[in-house]
Image (cartoon, rainbow, N blue to C red):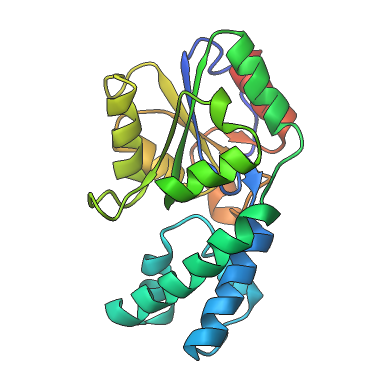
Length: 223
């Protein structure tokens, strides 16, 4: 759906935001971390175009499903990536132009704004703290391997539970990849897909409201 629906979610009190590809442009840091993982683990590099599709979904799943790695090899790659990303990649992740201001406008209207990301929760908190955005958000929710919280649907469910919001009521999920809208649908939530992140034709063709640019999203959420 390539048309923008004006003010479609003007009265929705809770806005859940994906992180990578929605709030921040994290591609440079993520791709550098992946380059590092392939180099130190001795795996053939599949090329940057392939790796761009890894931004958003859980990395271990992408290593297994897209490259056919075993679970053990995928975990080794994930650890090598994480070590580099935590040291260097976070510094390279900057908010997309207009997103900091949009969050501020939502908060000024009394809306609740939270993050729901496939990034590990502690990593997401460190990234947003580095950008000075952590205090503005009601909750920063991400994956947590220790508790088995993996995948966007599980993250959204955890965020809703911690914000004490019943599934299917009062919230909209904003993200750049199909797994954002699919995860929202599992909790009977509407979603908006955005065009400035790391999605492609599949996201543009999906039967989901689509915001090509940040001002379009602002019109959907604020009028």
